[in-house]
Length: 54
Image (tube, rainbow, N blue to C red; front, side, top):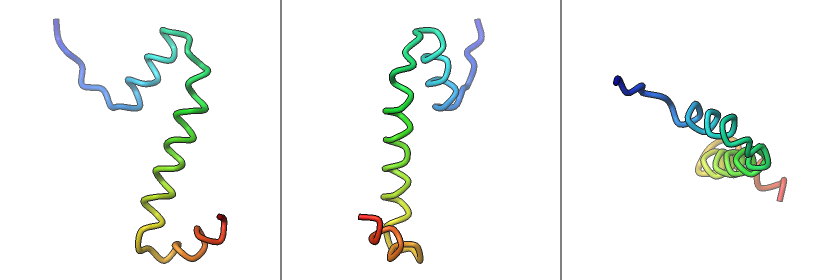
C-alpha cells in the first residue's frame, strides 16, 4: 500500500466528511482566523488597524 502525502487541510476535510463532524468546522475556522490575526498583528503595517478592532 502506498501512503499518500496529504496536506493538513485535506486531512481535516476528510475527517469531517467521514466522521460527519460538521459541528467542528466553525471551531476550526475561528481558530484559523485567530491564528491569522496573531500572525498579522506582529510587527506588520496592519497592526494599528487590527488593534482598533479590539
